[in-house]
Length: 141
Ligand SMILES: [Zn+2]
Image (tube, rainbow, N blue to C red; front, side, top):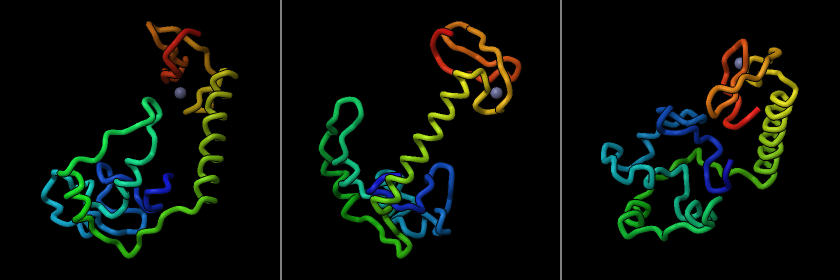
């Protein structure tokens, strides 16, 4: 959950409509013009997104003239709602809890996907779970 992204947004690659039932095509100007269509979508504010520091270098390239031209043509959506600070904090709490549960399961020899007892097996650079075969992580046991 990001402060610059509508709470209904669920990804345009996997979905034709958002969680509020709005068809992405209906709120994207010139939806068949593929170049820049993500920048014309109302669901994500690309200027605010670009202002976020990256995890690795910390900075992003400035938006290009071409990108800014697409952003100037952004669509609108009456269902657009950005998350509150409380919703973002709660989402982070839940995400952190899921991550901790996942890591605890691996540590305690339980498959995080299947919730069954496992034996860790080194295969090349990765560690897999037996008997289900799930890849647990890259590294050594
Ligand atoms: Zn498994």
